[in-house]
Image (cartoon, rainbow, N blue to C red; front, side, top):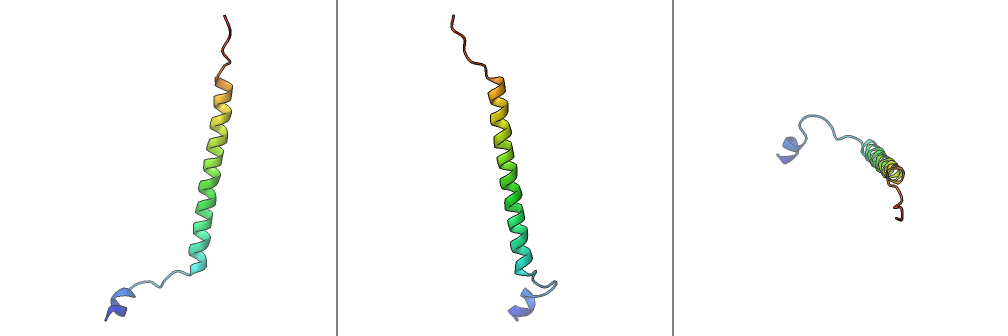
Length: 54
């Protein structure tokens, strides 16, 4: 009885496709985070000026 209610509709996707999509999403997120961190430090270094002595 529970098998029919759990398995109505489409089949389970293959594990390899799930693992590949998870790895791609993780890589994309890590790449975007690294890019954002590198560009934010580069911009802040250009906009911050050294204090001058008076």
